[in-house]
Length: 216
Image 1 (cartoon, rainbow, N blue to C red):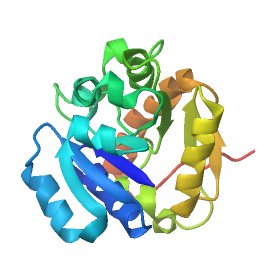
Image 2: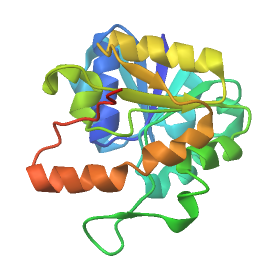
Image 3: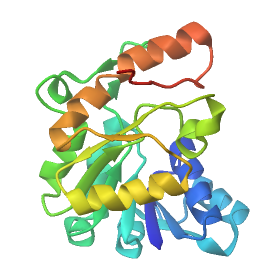
């Protein structure tokens, strides 16, 4: 499968590396075609890795992962282009974290409670098939659930059922065995609102290697 990655940070690099290892062709996109971080990632990941702009990565991928920071996610999606994203599965991994007052961050007021970043991305590209996933854990855990012992959960949501099934297949290939579908894209409000407690737990334990488990 051809996959586009929006973002050159730790999340984009970690997911891109895992996807390339699994045999997918991966193009990492950034604001500029010659981004240094993307070039370094390409040099480390062989023939399945390439780089380009946001728009080029989107045009390349059958599936696109948005791995940008929340503050720049809508701008990145707009730069990727509605034409390139129409009809495609867009996996949104970002969170609307506001660091303007330092740590711990809060959520942007306009993107919480009755709204979410996932919903705003869906509104921005209405014909894309947005699936919120992987935003409630560290990037290392995203691709290696064994960093936390035992069974624990990964949440997804989105409006398109076949798109969620496709994303579930990708997540299963990462090794995930407990994936909980929370329903339509409005459920991103809940998963994004887990981030303030996630950050507090990371600060308390001085480690990102933990996760949530729903016990019934």
